Length: 241
Image (cartoon, rainbow, N blue to C red; front, side, top):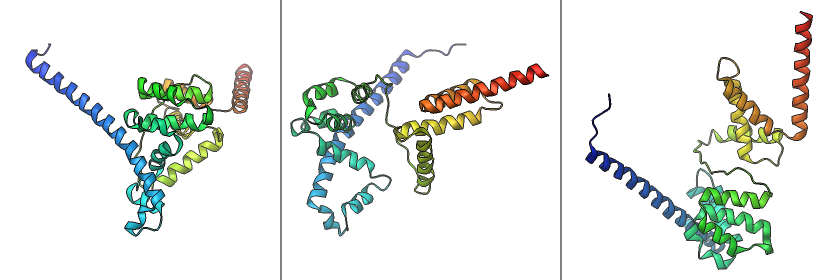
């Protein structure tokens, strides 16, 4: 039985949803712009050694005090102002820090060939995910799949275990693979183990397939050789019985 529809209440609720989503978008854009400003001030603190006014011993100690979970983001923000040319810095608050970080990648790669005007125009027009995809395509020469940035909060006691797992995966995949690929391999291995017996066979197959795709060409050949050898052995055993 369908619930009785109250049009007035329905419009009110839907408007509230739209208002909250619009507010979230506005807050995100404001935060993005403020982070660009934060990077500029961090650069000034380091250059002027302002950390001494707090009786701290170093700039790293200053960052550790304000970024206790990870200083990597602080250095990302600072790199925006260190590597991008002055003419486009005034536009950075409008495009936000996430896109600015992508611009830094292009600027460092292209150096004197960096077309700041063209890339700034792309940053203004494209959504963040599409712009990240465009940068990745420019840097690698390949039309790769789009990506996103995901943040995790970890306790300090958890970090060594996570770092060791990622480093181990990097040794298996090769040093050219990103930490994202390494994390995906760890997750794929977990899913394969979880669904190997009694689980979802499609999840298991998908996990194995993604693991295979992340292997080097030599590892893929060795993997296929072992599969063929095992299959041949099973056929021989079946015929013999």
